[in-house]
Image (cartoon, rainbow, N blue to C red):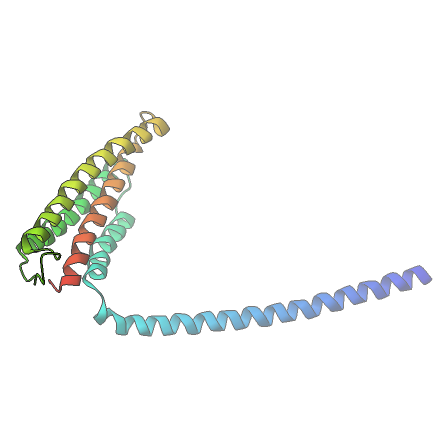
Length: 188
């Protein structure tokens, strides 16, 4: 009987302990949910206010990358459709890169304080060299990545969507680099 009462007391202590932990956990979870809800509401209202203050890069990402993501969710996802979609949006980034490259090549509002600072010609040469280097990098990267994918997947059809997606990301990165330079120079 003594053992039974000790076991009973022990069980009561455990149940009481678990009960108090559970109510605290529920209270904590409730407070966290309330805090997360408040944070989401404040983020939504600040996003509404910040939409007017987005940088050109952010606007382009929202428009092009957002459309790519949306269309990828709403498109039948055969490998050929995934490849076509990535190619379609890669071309949009190419257009952005070409537009902002041309703007940079026409930019001539450079004040050369002395011979240690770049001239307009130096600036244009630098932008041109960046483009040549990027084109070389792109070709090498795509060749090497394709070799890696062939090693991983052999003749698998998944290689096409993966390599096209990789091309998309590279072209987006190049376009955004040019846009960023334009933004810093005040070119729209």
